[in-house]
Image 1 (spheres, rainbow, N blue to C red):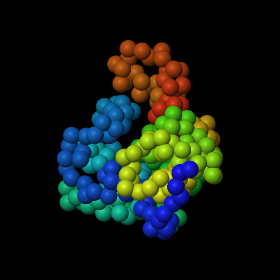
Image 2: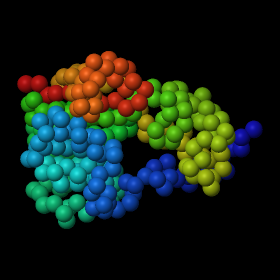
Image 3: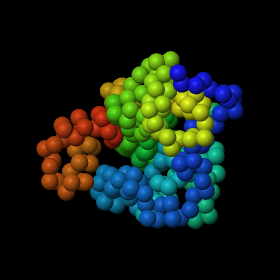
Length: 282
């Protein structure tokens, strides 16, 4: 039988501190010059939806981490900012305030109600990269996005699909499909016992590693179907335009070689990454 946890739950490290999460490391210019692949893909998409010119556009990165995307966008002329719930990540991105001057802090936190420092209708575009799957109260976040966008403004979110086969954070297959109860906990323990995800906390025993990952999966990941996300956004005044924007994204990336594969692209996205967009109507 797998061994039980030998360390008090209060003394176990949080999953985010597994050593590979760069949000706890001070941002350097080399972190966004050149850009990591996931940032370059999002920039490519933003360029497509803004007719190739993002200069002067006010863009908010929701859940910005330490600000790689904010810095990359600033380098390309956009008036970009980022907001976070964790002040530790904002502190990691302190270099940005010295590189770029602005009336508002480039990175800032939200208050206890989830409200940011920016005025109503301030942004042309609100984006996020692998953030929505960490949001417990999506309706509240959607409401703040609506407040921050100008009329006609666009919001775009890239995130792992609910039915992705392998969970992208702790890298265990199918576990995130299971209910957040003992069934999931035992599944995590079983998969770890098979030698999966050995890179995470290798110096802890099986019971402790199970506890760390299970706690994170329950408290910090919230996978929803695209249909559910669409419903929430629409109920808060943001009209989904997922199909049209995914079409544009697929065509732009593949130089219009396979534009008729849109239905397939949407189907595949259900098991990989989703690009979801909505617009604030008048």
